[in-house]
Image (cartoon, rainbow, N blue to C red; front, side):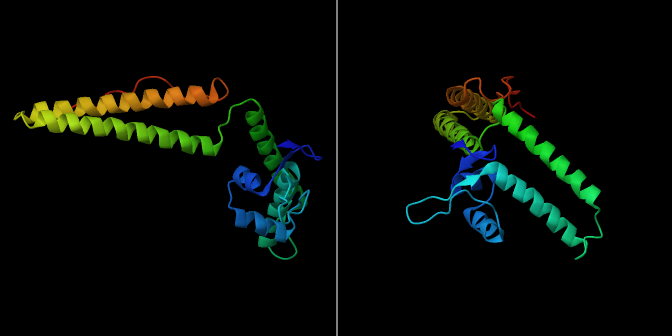
Length: 191
């Protein structure tokens, strides 16, 4: 991604959809409604958008839509109120941009990937635990001992999955992102 003319980032259609948390058809609808773009897409040529211009357009559109909700004449909201809301929205966007520049945010795709990796590590640990329980459980007749073994295997699988999560976090983000707390979870105990 490169710097765009209006101070935002130059992004393609898929990147814009991801940044805004919407689908590609939503971006297409925005374009039909007047969303600004830097370059029109065509065969083999991707659409280009300036994120600052798109955010500005979305804010203006939200204000206009909100004013329209009060009636055609916009009498339900004063210009001062619309300006105040716009200022608040711009302040929120500036905070998000600053957090992004400081490395305090994590891309949603990375979060989904990290969660999938955690679930896979947990699944692997539980599979191993079930095998141990099945093997040893056949010789144990004391229910509290079986329950204790199950809790121990669950705690072991959770700890291994958590360690894998932290290892992958460090590998992907290093010190860039806010790191999840490393305080150990309390083990599952008998009730």
